[in-house]
Image 1 (cartoon, rainbow, N blue to C red):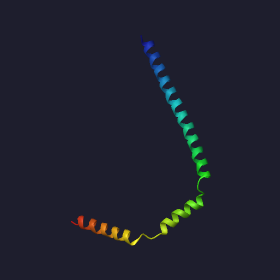
Image 2 (cartoon, helix red, strand yellow):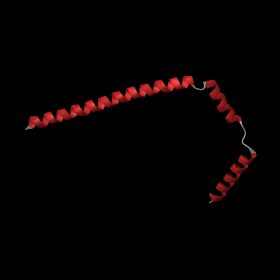
Image 3 (cartoon, one colour):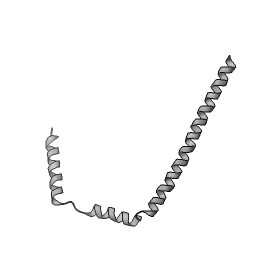
Image 4 (cartoon, rainbow, N blue to C red):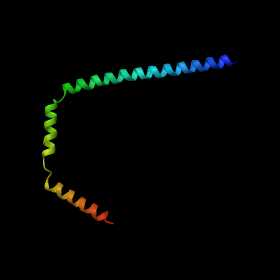
Length: 84
């Protein structure tokens, strides 16, 4: 009786470890494949210099007067609401 329980335990352990090993192996290969696809798409897409220039342009642009007024109004309302 004991040998049967031990055999079943060992079988269960091996099946479990095998399942985890197969899953992790598939996960590693899927991650490598996705990495290669993304790097290829990135090379074929917008060059980094152009992308960086777009970000710099957006950062250096000043907001319009309407946006500034809305921000100032929101800050004033927040300060008024949170006064103790």
